[in-house]
Length: 111
Image (cartoon, rainbow, N blue to C red; front, side):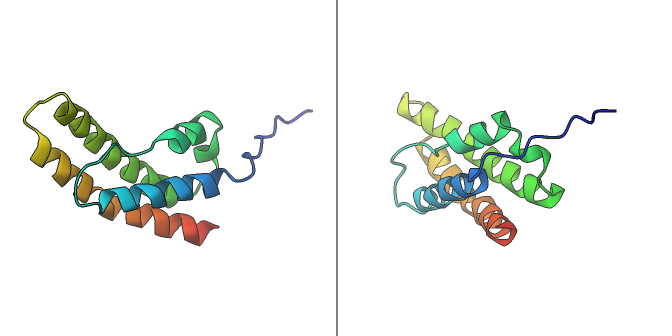
């Protein structure tokens, strides 16, 4: 008799995710690795169920971008601990630009 409705996402969750991706794209284009990619809004979107209601194509684009960023963050962290991965970290940051750009385009289209 009663249907459990999926709660609607918190207002602005996609906009916050888009802002984080846009910042990360700027960071990815920086000449030198100066820090790690931000992942806060991605984790928040997972926690609040945002990905449950997103179209599959958009969800995959966002997840691909954050997977590239998580990989780069791991290499940046290793470089910060004096492992010999500075070049690999820089390359991973640059490689993350393409999936970040794709996710931004898809999010902008969805908004």
